[in-house]
Structure formats: C-alpha cells, structure tokens
Image (tube, rainbow over all chains, first blue to last red; front, side):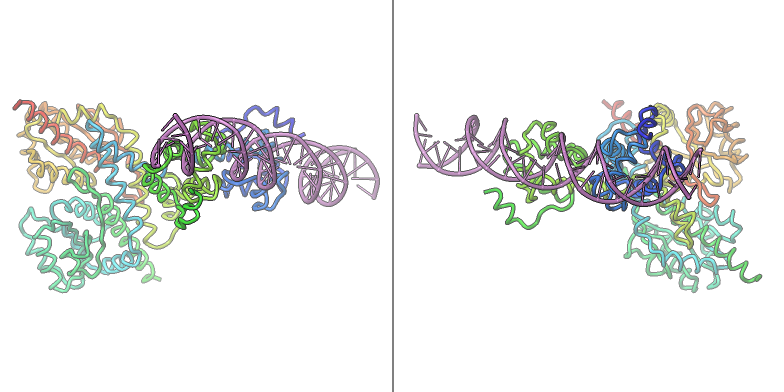
Length: 288
Length: 288
DNA sequence: CTTGGAATGGAATGTATGTCTCATTTTTTA
DNA sequence: TAAAAAATGAGACATACATTCCATTCCAAG
C-alpha cells in the first residue's frame, strides 16, 4: 500500500530541490494520473504554492483526491504539507534582483569599511548589466556587426575612461585574427593612423560624457573620410552619435564618481565576437 | 463610514508598490490597530501572502476582524483580495537571480542571432559579479588597501587580457591624484621602469591563466627588490600568488572563450577608491 | 461629566477547503 | 481468460476559514 511506503520512507523531501529530484527519479514507477500532476507541479510551482487543492486539480485535469494521493505517495501526510514545500520555495528563494541590489546599495551607502566600497561597485556593475540587457536594441546590434564584419580593418577609438574597453576590444579582435588598429593617444601618431583609414574600413568609437575632445575630433575627421563609425556612448546628444552610422546608448551606473564599465564591456565583447562569427559564416558561404 | 470611503475610492491598489505607497501615505490618519497591522504587513509581506487571517492576526497582535477592516480601509472587499496583492508580488517579482541567469544562458546557448552572444556575455558578467560578491575576503581587502595606501608610487602590472583592468586602475588612480605607473609592454622599457621601484612603493599585479610570462617575470623581479605586491589572479596555484603579499582569487565566468572582466574590474575599483579614501583619512588624522 | 461616534474585541456563521470513503474502471497476475 | 490488485472518479464530511455581527471600550466634543 502506498501509505505504508510513505510512512516507511522517513526521508520526506522537505525542500523543493529534493522534491523535484524525487519526482523525476520516481516518474517511471508512478501511476499515470500521478505523473500528470507531478508534471503540472514542476511546471507550475507557483500555482501549487497559492492555489487550493480543487483549483489545482482542475488546472491539472485531475480529481482533488488524486492530488492528495500524489502528496501521500511522496511521503507527505496530505496536500497541505506538500504545499508547504512549494511555499517555502517562494519564501526562501533568493530575493528578487532589485531587492538584492537595494541591499547591496544600502550596505554600500550606509556601511562603513572598504567592503562597502566594493559592494557599491558590484551594485553599479549589476545595475548597468541589468539595464543594458533590457535596453539593447537588437536591430542596432545586427547592423553594427554587419558593418564591422565588412570592414578590412577595424579601428578602435577611445580615450581616458573608455580606453580600457578599447584595449579589450583590440585584444579580443586580435585573438579572433581580425585586423584592427587601436588608436591610442600615447604614441602621438593618431593623425597619421587615422589618415590610413578608408571607407572600406570601420571604426568602433567609445566615449562618455565628458567626451574626450580628442576622441570627438578624431571621430569627426575619420567620418569625413567616409569611414563608417559604430559608436558606444551615453546619450543621444552625444557628439559621437552624429558621426556614427550605428550607435548604442549605454547607461552605466556609477559609484564613488567612477562609472562602471561592465555594460560597455559586455556590448563590446558581443560586437567583437559577433563580428568573428559573422566572418566565419560568410567565409563558409563563399567557399560553398 | 469607512466602508463608504472604500467603495467611493475606485483606485484600489492592485500592485504591491502602489499598496505600499498608499499605506505609507495614509499612515497618519489611520486608527492605531490598523497602523499596527499595516506596519506588520510591510515588514512581513511573505507572512501576509501565505498565512491565514487568524495566524496573521495573532502574529501582528490583533484580532482577525481588525485585519479585515484594514483590508477594507484600503478599498479591498476583504482580506482575501488584499492577500492576492501580496501573492502576486511573490509571483511576479522577478524570478530569482539564478533563474534569470539560467534563462539568459539558455538563450545564449540555444538561441540564434547575435543577441544570444550579447546575453551570454551579460550572463557571464553577472555570474562573476555574483560569485565575487560572496567570495571576497574582507580582511584581504583591508590588508591590500592598507598596503597600497602606504606606497609612494603604485605600479600597475598587467598584460594581454588583464591589461584593460590595469589601464582603468591607472586612470582612476590618476583621477584620485595618486602617483602611479602603468607598466605596459608596448614601450619596451619595462625593465628600466621596474628598476625604479623600491620597498616604499607597491605593485598591483593582475594575471590570469594562461599567465603572461612577462607579467610573471616582472612580478618576480619586482618582488625580489622588496616591493610588496597585491595580486589579482584566478587560482591559489597561480605563480603570482607566491610573489604577493596579499592576493585575491577571482573566478571569472567566460563565454565564447572570452572571460568576463566585470568582477576583476569591481575589485580593482574597490582597491583604487579604497586607497583614495584611506589616504584622505590618514591625511586628516595627521593634520589633526 | 455626559454623550455621540468611532474603534476594538470576541464570538457566531456560513462557506469553501482538504480529506476520506466507496463504487467503478483499469491494469496486472495467475 | 478469470481473478486480484491497483488506480481512479466522484461525492460525502468534518473542519478550518474569512467574514460578519454585536457588545464593549475608547476618545473627543459639548
């Protein structure tokens, strides 16, 4: 009798993950209707947590009594105690993203010590990632990648705060064996470098407010040469935006006066690897 | 009569945030016991979502009937409909961090198009931030900041993939008016630069597997000169770890062969700004 | 101090809920 | 194929529940 097994089995799943594992484990050996509920339960755990036995049974297309039997098969003494597990899951599962961030920020603002600073930067980075993940325009991404994939040489243009991103792009392009040229201010030969760029090339330009004048100037020059520009910047009023064929607006959160780079980095990497993939694909097609 | 106001007020709060705002807004004008419940409800929203009217009332120290009146004051027709709002909050609040990441990763792996690549990098960055947020050793952070704050010049040492982080550190240190020297390979004068470093200085060295041989060599040389090193690396077996006075283990998630830099960036910024703060503080103390 | 009205406590009430029982159907075993 | 066992469906039932009602207390205005 199933009740016997239930009472014998002392290891009643008390947490959702164990329960889930138990269900998946026993799936084969369970009656049809029970499996039907089991599937519904794992697919709609929220409904189990909040619904009544009758409503759940109706949604799953079974009788309430079957729901009870399902619970008993798993070792619970009734639907109610099974439901507790589903409720605990909602209670204990990590608080929402926003709440976690709020906690981090609160610690960062109120808290003392350097851990608070660290938390602040983590929070800023997370926020930025979260924002861009929602805001990114897929069409722009495709456009930018197509544009860059066509380029003979990709010039990477960024100064000051954006420079780390540029250097990472250059590194990644290099690893992907995509010809690229990092335009740094250090060497002092920017003007000459830029002069080499032709409309067959392309530029990734990155600049955030306050826009480094050199970046803007160089972007202007290079766009006047007919070289298409993909810009990553922080506002539609950015001077970069007017020179760019495609441009992305990235809103980076800041902490302690230093803006995060995480969102820009993610976008930069996506562009880079996207170009790499696109080149591989078109390369294949040409051969075929 | 309160019921009249309730029926008159058509704008019944249907979502948790509105409800919260409404409660906080009316707090002053509500009866004592109602406020008592209101406070309990905002402090223990999960209990409201799962408990029964009786159990909640007991926890809040009031009568069940008061709970009903509270709901009615807010425009609901009973406790049950008030409870719905608290349940929706749990349902609709963004799925847990892990679930969201899983979704992103699933999209990144299964999905086509370049958006998937982007999602992959965002997921990798988020994961890294999440991991380091838990794993960071606060004592190490304090030690590292103290060490660096004492330094006359902070040398920043990193190549290849870690170089963007180094360049951002150098930028930030510069903005904070902290003397620093970025040791890049480009100029080819690394050996000479390193020779200037004394035990009164300090080094931030960053290197991940596969460790750039130049970084390791330079770290060895500089540590033999008695210059203390703060290392950011990815394993306790890292050659950097053995030269370092303080070292951090940062596990960066990777996507498409490119590891995220977000966690390293956050740590780097925390170190930098931490040093800045520490210097300000000790500066003040000396004056006082 | 009195009185009107709101606020509160506590018990009564009707409903909705989980659980159980039993008849019926399906599946397994001999 | 027959018999036994398991699974299922559907209704019955007790209980726990939200809600309501009424008596009492508290508070403020006159």
